[in-house]
Amino acid sequence: MSPLTTSFLLLLSHLAITPLQISADSLQSITSSYGLTESFNFTFPDETLNSADANDWIDDKWSLYYKKGVDWGNSDIVFSPDPSTSTSTLVRRQESSTSSSTKTKTKTSSASTSSSTSITTTSVSSPASTALNGEPPVIRIEYPQGSYSKRTGGTQFYANPLTSSNAKVAAGSGNSTTTGQYERMLLSYDVWFPVGYAWNQGGKLPGLRGGPDPKGCSGGNETDGTTCFSTRLMWRSGGAAEVYAYIPTSQKNFCSQSQVTCNSDYGTSLARGSFSFVTGQWQTVQLLVVLNEVGTANGIVELWYNGVQALKFTNLVLRTSTDLNSVGGMFFSTFFGGDDSTWATPTDQFSYFRNIQLHAGAGASNLTGDKATVKSFATLNAGVCGWGMLGGIVLGLMGLWVL
Image (tube, rainbow, N blue to C red; front, side, top):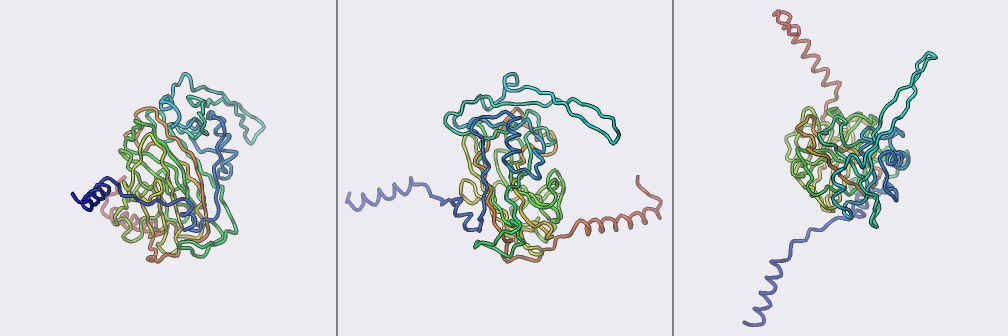
């Protein structure tokens, strides 16, 4: 065999065993590309904390919305050792060794001079270990067996550390004029699911939200784009993942486009199954939202999984009013569900989070887009009422009122 033939065969062999390399985008390149000039790193303690101390830390350090604290799931939050350096004892909690109860007296008073004292019991949970093994603690969220939405497991809170009344437009992709607020924001974090994690039908993971209404755009509360939007992540069966968004859906042809799954009662799935979560290792997600110009369908939602772009939408209506003038911050919302028990976790389970960051910039999208045709709730309700009145008249004439 000639030396040339040998060299050619060696080259073919090398090509056959060398996997295709997919270039990854660094966080720095993403923030630079989109003109995200401000940032906030969510600080973590240097020791493990039980749920009571963890709530105090989050309240004090994480700039929760109007300092209102964690919405719910207080006892399901602890700061725990990094699961990559720990044993499987962190996967399941032993109630006898890691839980206790504290009683808190609460005084309430009425408009009169009388007062009363009530006693409430609050569970305090603790990490299964305090040994950090050379790594900083991470935040651990518990989903108790049988829990699904309904505030029965997981947790939810809204953190908005990046607020500005004089944000300046920086050079970046798709920048437009600004209202002086942060119309574009990126959330980055690492998440870990233990080996053997039972995904069931699915559950929610942290994302972004905005608008003057801090409580809407979740739990079946639809939006017309005037008061709020939300874009969380969601896992489905087997770890299949998506962006789960509460955004207006009446834009012409929106629900018929590929990779969009609309639900008349709940949120909209964007690019379901475009990537998948795995167990037993840290994985990084970066979620970008750029508000559309009011009146134009040019809003952006983009997500990178381990630095590789997993999905991108550039034709979204995220808002229909300038009253919704910014991306507010991190919507840390995670639980199993789903709105019924078929979504419940089959056993006590945990997820872990670290390296949580926000990056923000000024300027709505100025990409070319169709004219927004989203109808407001007022218009929709007027139409419903009109048909209701007509139906009532017809049924009344027929003597067929239905109660």
